[in-house]
Length: 315
Ligand SMILES: O=P(O)(O)O[C@H]1O[C@H](CO)[C@@H](O)[C@H]1O
Image (cartoon, rainbow, N blue to C red; front, side):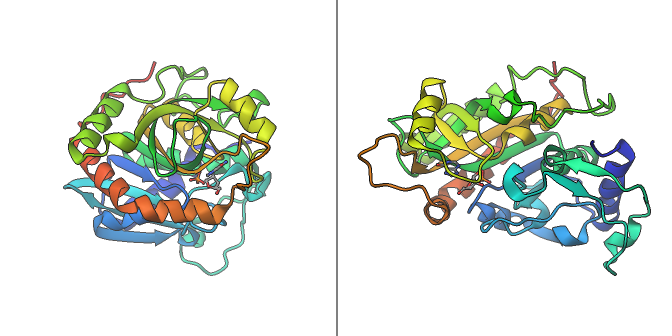
């Protein structure tokens, strides 16, 4: 079961009433990459817990704040903390009782509805669309499967493998609301080619070409990291990097006509060899994010500077 259009609008209208920012670009920060939000100027910050209907962040490295501001003179909104399938909302019930928080008082809808994890994970994307956002910049931390990748590489996402989707866990499952998009949206052009081209130019100008890669991101449900056999399988299937996020957001963003640019920071090398002593761990993921923070900030600033208004290129 998903939210209704009117329920998304409650949240969007609340935000529009509480900030003067009118963002055209949304930035979603991956694990340990929340510092990207700090580069916005003239900030207006909301804690997720104060926004009607907004889910809460539960993962270390995801602060749970929505930051509005300007970057290179462009109005942006930044999610400092995203939601993942594994966070334990297989089913989520709306709270109809106000806990006294001003925002919750707006929740006058009384039906008790169950929402699937996919709808919660992607809830902010449709809010952004209703705010007027045209372009989504989606970042994540990922494990490198491609043997040419090193820790600290930045991979432009050119395509994805949606493993949960193969089992029917697609965020667009359920009744389709044509006000957002088509029943059967095309995904062969999900990651905007012009924005990837721009990112390559930006990276070259910044001297980042040595650690810039382009590849395929594979999403799994998590939260356990992959086994050695799984990593080898994913590599054979054509994945260059593996993670537990992003793809759901991208599908919903494309469905509602946003342009998408995605990048993965390769925070660790996936373990592919039974003789290896390496073990994937979240601390290493966060640490690599800290080490690459300034380059990512610089790259995203320049990218935002170069983004032209969208032409709503959905198929
Ligand atoms: O995808 P993001 O949110 O960057 O986080 C990645 O890092 C966490 C694992 O360390 C997982 O949540 C994985 O998806």
